[in-house]
Length: 163
Image 1 (cartoon, one colour):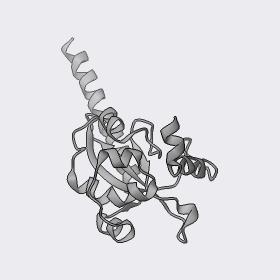
Image 2 (tube, helix red, strand yellow):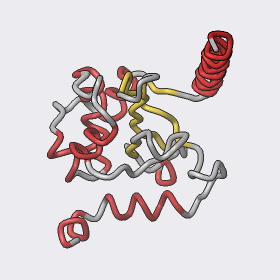
Image 3 (cartoon, one colour):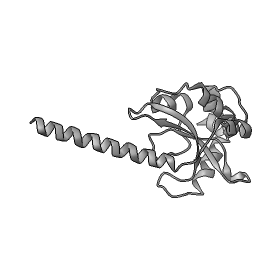
Image 4 (spheres, one colour):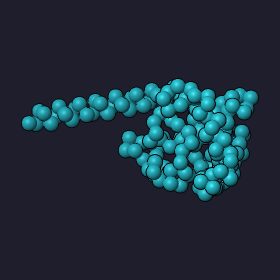
């Protein structure tokens, strides 16, 4: 019996290390923006959860660096993030990681779309908040039609208030 428990423990340990190694490899291949770069692109407005939740992309992007620097979401659950900031508009790896668009790259010279992502720890709480270069839809394929629809809804505050 002790051997079986040990073998199960060993198997679980190996599988969890493999999962986190895969996570590290995935993150290593992603592009992230520094807060300094975000400030130079979008400014540095003090973070307000209510303004972020109601705001359009310009409002959200102007608070991105401040939100990260405040570390106010570190240790929070993804449901607490969603409650404070509203439904996620972006997508990062899976639906359990909240992500929020900060700009519409289709309307800019560089054609890069960035999103705020709330990266979880191994226990599921937020361990880090970063600005991530968005490239894909949730099925892993770039969907050029999805992004403009989501961003149009974000930039139309009247529609949001009437819902």
